[in-house]
Structures are given as structure tokens and as C-alpha cells.
Image (cartoon, rainbow over all chains, first blue to last red; front, side, top):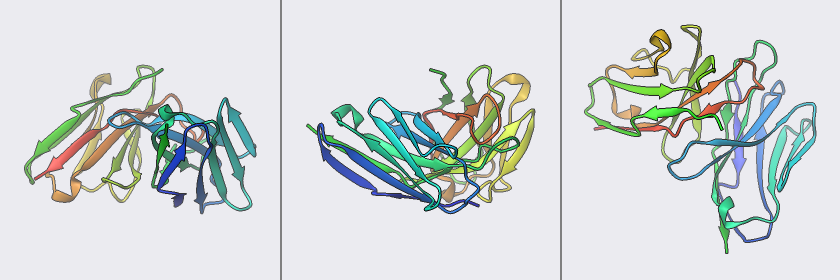
Length: 115
Length: 115
């Protein structure tokens, strides 16, 4: 199976600074790495993802990095705002044709952006 | 964006009773999933379902669990009988296609409390 470790579990940053969350995985066959943001009482929402054929992806202020050799991937939020405060989950899955979308999640990071 | 609806948001039942959790997936999606999240921990895969059949299930998907989607209505998770350790938030998800790189859309979860 797959195991995903996520750190830190709690992250507090000042508004407009950057925040970084790191995840490691065990299964070298994992090739899809999505990040989900979950606000209290809401559903987890996909905010960005990266596939194994890439090392870096950016969508506006979100950057994800993937180091396949180290089996490590990370989310960087630049210029944080209070609205970024939420729980963030990383995940990994093995899948191409015939894959089963069985996402393995990290333990989650509670991000608090202090005004 | 696409929405997955879960009903009810909170269910309280006595141990040994039966419970059915309901999920209304995204309308054109074909693949459906249940994940379990114990308080403070990550979401864990329970089962995925396609074309009326369970495709894969984890060891968390006990014999007391069953899933179905009769005639395109709600995708349901039934637990009969319930046990204290079934208390958790259950998230439903759906995706358009299978394959590990397809986006899963999650519902807001049903918090199940077994007394």
C-alpha cells in the first residue's frame, strides 16, 4: 500500500509571508499528488495537483514541488492571506490506465494566517 | 464547481442499530467512493464503486458495511450493525473517470456518532 506523512500538523504564519507544507510517500509507483483545502464544516476541495512527469507547478500563489527521487512533495503558499486559513491535506495515488483513484492522504496541516 | 451532497450532515444512533449514509454525487460522474475520517486523523479509503459493483475495498470496510446505488439514486453506505468504533466523519466522493489522475470531488461529510 501507500503511506503519506505530512508535516507540520500546525502552522501559524503572519499575513503576507509564505507557508510551506511537506509530504513524503513510500510507494515509488505513486504518480499523482493532489492537495486539498478543507474549511471547517466544508468539503475538501482540490486546490492544485501535480503529476509525476513534472517537478514544479504553479497556480497563482500556490506552488507545488515534486522530488521523485526523495519521494517528497510540498505545497508553498506565497503572500498568505487570512482566507488561506484552513486544513490542508496532501495525497498520493498510483494510477494510469486502470488505476483506481485510491488516494492515500496525509494527516493534515492546520494553517492559521495571522493578520 | 461540481458538488457532491451528503445527507444527513450529522447522525446520532445507538450501538447495534443500522444506519444509512446518503450521497448525491456529481450528476455525470461514474465512480463513487467512501472515505472515513476519525477526529484529528487523515481521511482513509474505504471503498470505490462503479457500474453497480464494488471495485476495491480496504480492510476498514468491514463485513457490516455495504454500498449500493439503486437505479441512479443516492449512493449509500449502510452499516449494520453499528459499533462504537464506527464513530467518524464519512466522506463521499465521485469522479468522472477512473485512473489515479482523475479529480475526486468530495462532499462535506456525514458525522456519525454511535453511542
